[in-house]
Amino acid sequence: MRIEKIDLINQVYETLKHNIINGTLAAETPLRQEELSESLGVSRQPISHALVLLEREGLVTELGRKGKMVTPVRAQHLSDLYQVRAELDGLAASLCAQNRTPGLEETLERVLEQGRRAISENSLELLLLADIEFHRALYTHSGNPEIGRIADSSWNHLVRAMHQVLNDASIHQAVWSDHQQIAEAILSGNSEQARELARSHANSSAELTAKRLTIP
Amino acid sequence: MRIEKIDLINQVYETLKHNIINGTLAAETPLRQEELSESLGVSRQPISHALVLLEREGLVTELGRKGKMVTPVRAQHLSDLYQVRAELDGLAASLCAQNRTPGLEETLERVLEQGRRAISENSLELLLLADIEFHRALYTHSGNPEIGRIADSSWNHLVRAMHQVLNDASIHQAVWSDHQQIAEAILSGNSEQARELARSHANSSAELTAKRLTIP
Image 1 (spheres, chains in turn purple, brown):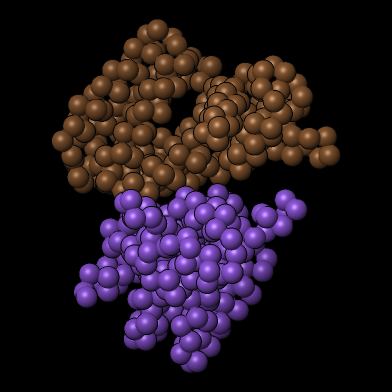
Image 2 (cartoon, each protein chain N blue to C red):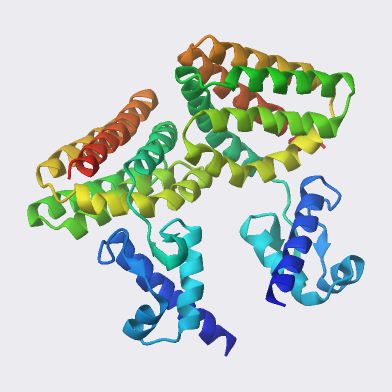
């Protein structure tokens, strides 16, 4: 009985999170419990619980007395997240280069190939998956689990922005040429170069995002 | 009725957290619900809820089938946390130096004075408070709220270690001379120097901690 209840909350939570991140539920959409309860076919209780969880993660925000809404995508927030990510990605890349664990080369090759395929198929969804996987590979192989743990809490927000920014196909080549260079620096064991390339990749993603989000 | 229940969980949570962080509940102490319920004078339900919250924060760990215990202080975990903190502290210090907000000088002077007083009174508790306040001042004045948000999740673990490491009074002068130098670099607007001093301060804290935790 209890497990079913928790499971229902989780299902509602995952569904709403997925729809917020991929933009199906656009920024600032009001989230009315009755409407959600009707459209998802569940009672209001699991909806209310799931909204509290999403609010804690910053994906849902109070809308004054009017209830809750999908958190707006704020350019300043994304710029703050990217500023921190530049340091974490730099650290992860430099650790990978210092400590080339077995499997690292294979993993990087596989993910780079995944990116090339996504570009040739012009699939935004595959491109995003490959992008996340590239960065997660660096966190995993860094040997410091705290980097991935911290990065997890900001990726949801970044992916929301990427859904808007990556719509511009001209960016795809540049992103994956950056990834290629970071991988090469890591595999050649040049940890300072790997750090600098990973930092500047995050900084240019931040600039692209800021440009796209401030131009209407 | 509901608020009272949540309040009770919070009270139990805060009490246990405080005692774990300051070492009253030592690492690896078994946490038996009946005993805790008796010693804190509350029913087992709020205890069980509070333990789940503490487990999520990594302060409580499963002890096989035997129940739960206070998470061991692991040298590797602290070294991972300090490695990330070196980057975040470096970023915060460099941002403070680039963007000297009103009140920054006053705040730093006040906290440095707090540290000097704690040393002269030889009070471990005051020293820890001043130490946390020094670093939190850098996060706050960095202008990037994500830095403080992330740092919060690791400070509980670091403070547990500091309770052991700072027992050695010979370290106090060195810690606060580092803080003084970081503050000077920030106030003179030298952002790269501020970054490097803050990073190396975290790295030497990491080394001190590793040395104290591995020597029995």
